[in-house]
Image 1 (cartoon, rainbow, N blue to C red):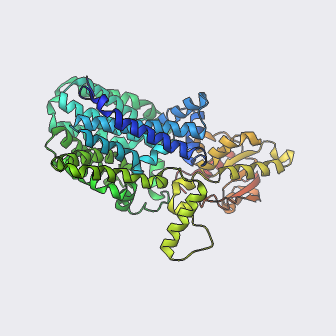
Image 2 (image 1 turned 90 degrees about the horizontal axis):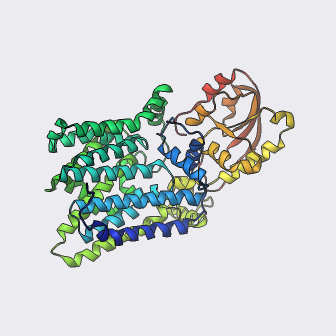
Image 3 (image 1 turned 135 degrees about the vertical axis):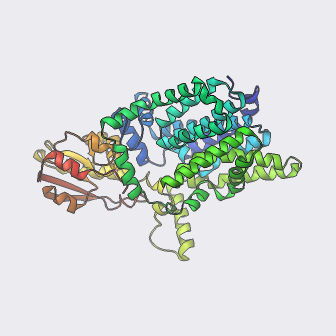
Length: 511
């Protein structure tokens, strides 16, 4: 079994080394000048509650977080270095796919630049989340499917089953590819259904995903509750309600000639394997649109479109060598978008960029700084945590001993709970509970007779406790709007049982 033609790695060394050096440079520029992102804090806490499943995601990212923490690699730099190395793996898979499909030197360099610099890939590969794993499994699945269609080696099907199983343990959006691959094989290699290999591969994928499925069954399918809540109340972002514009900006408009050409070329390709991959990708896109998922779920598909576009441009410029440096320059120009995707600018400079964007919209200079959430929500999610923890710790210390006795520390949002657990212990805070996503399950059995409630509304708490006292409000720069002015309440004398309070507080939506 061979994933690529003989000598491929030698030909790929230079573009892959370039991608690695670029990633190391971005990591060095970023350092730890930004804090943990809310998702990173959530996954670290999930790693401390090891299980076979969680409310809103499969367990692989939590298992990886637990491993990193056990190795004392849970710092911001270590987490993002891990994400960056996985991102280099995404680029390597794209380069191998390019070689397998007949790409030459120009195509490989284009793929390396596109998959390293397109914001949809760079932003995901700059933070520790399940999305970088998702991109890796998609590209590897495309590579294995293409190679199987070329060689007919059943061992490639077994490997494909393993990759899809790992994908299902990372993010369930890859289920779309699991559903479209049989369609592709039916059209391009229907005889495979008469052999045991395809069924063994499917069984292998299902076996790997079985722990998460069993956990969902045992916990009454909380993921379905999450999906319903997610679709009715999704996270706010600049382009969320404009999916086409969202994809255009996420993949960089400058790169549209590459991935746009690839999206069409892979359907019209003479190469059988590329045409099959194009059909699978477009079928997944149709499924995503029909399911109403958010535009960024489709980003892994653009890895294939970038590869197909690079192949097409290499072929189109075969007789016009003078155009090739211009193509490479265009691909390299994507480095200008790096500050919008990765945390490389100092926060003060990023604030000036947000002010510039805001002033361009309104045509005047305003005294109030522009909201980072409006322009760079993924960066705003990294601000405010030290201030939140310091405020909460100060309020906790101000409580009388009898108020602290049996008191719980409860956070409204998963980012707040994660920050209190990651940064709070050195300041004397107890472990934080939560009502959001998996924190709701982890808070089972808690005694809510009294405590500090962080980020809640007074009206909501007044219906649950007789005593609700405001003890502090958070002031933070550049943070998410939900954190600015966030209240810390001391509550006492519950009006109902602890379990009734827990169920009333549950939130599976984004807010």
